[in-house]
Amino acid sequence: MKAAICQEPGRLELSEQPAPGALQPGWARLAVSHVGICGTDYHIYEGKHPFLAYPRVMGHEVSARVIEAAPDVAIAPGTLVVVNPYLSCGHCIACRKGKPNCCQRIEVLGVHRDGALCEEILVPAGNLYPAGDLTPEAAATVEFLAIGAHAVRRAAGAPGSRALVIGAGPIGLGTALFSRIAGHEVTLLDASAERLAMAREHFGFAEGITAGADTLEQVLAATEGDGFDLVFDATGHGGSMQAAFAFVAQGGTLIFVSVVKDEIRFSDPEFHKREMTLIGSRNATREDFEHVMASIRAGAVPVDRLITHRTTLDQVIGDLPRWAHEKTGLIKAVVRISA
Image (cartoon, rainbow, N blue to C red; front, side):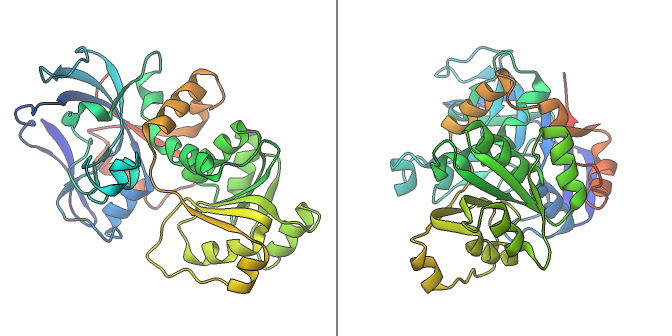
């Protein structure tokens, strides 16, 4: 089968490799339909991912059709599915608590093991969610949107809460969309006026703050001096994550949607004075995937506006390297592997 393989940082090649082998009990063979390109994929290409061994087939935002399933799997060939790319052990303390998204031995397709920028993959049937009437392209956006949906669910903010989403990239936009779906009053904060304008014009987020030397003053002015009930940081930038503590209202909640290798430091007196809650949000669970699919069906998520760039498996070896550096107008790129 054809596969796009990142042989080493900066070298992405299209090559032939053996198709996946025999099915294990509980697994299914899939024909990959569409794959979204994530910030993680750009980092892998650029050699910036800290826990990755090359060569690697990238791709973890996946829609696919079932080719065949093991005898103990009740899913029909031809079924369009959304793939949950987080393969969990099922036995560790996180899995026993119903939190496979933070499994101690998690393996993510396209990161810890080969992913879906290829024609066929094998996946445990428990990680496959029927897409129903979603288009194959829309189904490939579910995973990245589920990241934000999970963060919003973790925040547990009441309708009417004032929410600040820091970072207007794909994950930040997804978080903002699901915060709005939860009934929050959403403001976006980003260093790029262009991104804020795009969020306003294409997604209706009228409230925006352009980051600068006076960011805290702008936050306080936007909230009558109170700060925000919910602050989501989706920047993947340690400095931004540290600064976010100051934007949280008394009794409010700060949610780290992204992760960095840095140490995050904060003032304990300020933290305690506000009786603030700090939450880490990692990956997503089936509940979040189902919520995203239902929201797309209800028309609450404008997938057609989120997907700004398209390519094919044959062309991605040229397009992905270019998009890693040319991000003007880019929100989400999707690779068509098959129909």
